[in-house]
Amino acid sequence: MSDVDRLLANFESGTLLRPSVDIPNSVDLSRALARLSGDMSVGPGNGSEAEIEKLIGRSEHIVFVVADGMGMTLLETLPEDAFLRRNLARELRSVFPSTTSAALTSLATGAWPSEHAVIGWWTHFAEIPGPATVLPFVNRVTGAPLAQHGINAETAFPLPSRVSSFEKSAVGILPGNLVRSVYTGYSLGRAIRRGYSTVTDGVDATLARLDGATGPSYTYLYLPQVDSAAHTTGVHSDSTDAALLDVNNGLERLARDMPETAKLVVTADHGHLDAFPQEPMLVREDDEIGRMLRYPPAGDARVNYYHVREDAIGRFADAYAERMPGQVVLLTPDELGDLELLGPGEIPAPTRARIGDYIAISTDASVFAWSAAGAEGPDMSRLVSHHSGMSPKEVRIPLIISA
Picture 1 (cartoon, rainbow, N blue to C red):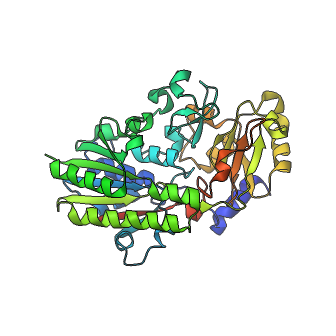
Picture 2: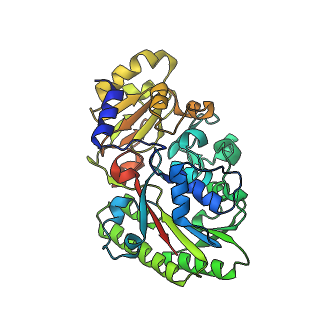
Picture 3: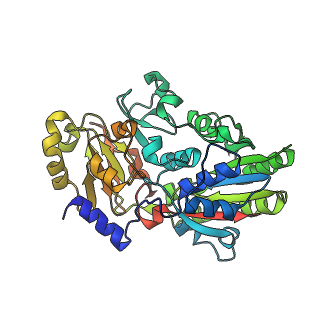
């Protein structure tokens, strides 16, 4: 059985969930919110976009909250009478890779990863050449700012954020350390940015913004607390439970105290899946696979993109299959495009260049890791929970609406 056939079998069984324009997703949500916020460049939506737009409805003020990492599996651990569960409007799917950089960029642009070209936590840039950690905007290997490589926001992000096209006045409220980041500036466009320190502070800042609004407004609130807890302590830990409850209670207060002319819309960028086994599928710079690569891999915990040396192209797939366990599938860019995992249609040239020669996908809870020669080991191996795959736990996300 070919790797494509094995992947299709996983889709058929429901072990993995295949990205599809026919299933309501975060791209549909982004486009619906853009239309409701007065972005006249967004044309009439498909069935799912129109359904989501109708569910949200028109209102003078829109508050859009992204609770990072709060997938359906986590949401369902809350009591049935919890605010977030009571106001669940429907289930959506994240994009692939189901990781913050790709998913937030889809929410900002209303485009699939194939179009916006942010295809992993680590995305390959020819200007380095090699992978960059996109959200912190640094070289993955050296940690150097991307500006030192001549990379600016326009280079990194080919599609503009739609927020700058909103007729509603826009404000973004984020943790203080993110307010001035390159990515925040890109994703929020001309929106005013304000920082906060705790969930309580973020809710207070949102209510103050609504109270001071002099006309129709759009407010974006980003809450990373659940994601941070799950990464470091696991999905089922007391720390993650506490973070989830804190977000639930904070948003319940926000919904209660905001004006009647405001609509609260909440979603997540992805869910979480604890790593098992916790020992990663490691490729080292100086092992057989590592020596075949032109650059360190890009991608994420459960997806790797490989740029292979020209003299190793003919033997890479066989060597990789011998090395990696059976839960890993290896695809060519043509196969990835035919499956439309990054989105519908042909993969544009800028995105294809970032993909490289092969794409490896973990079909279970195992994770990839990379280590430079002589390094003690990859930092990500210390994390307990990860995402970026296509398991139901990673791609099922909520759409919560409260007025």
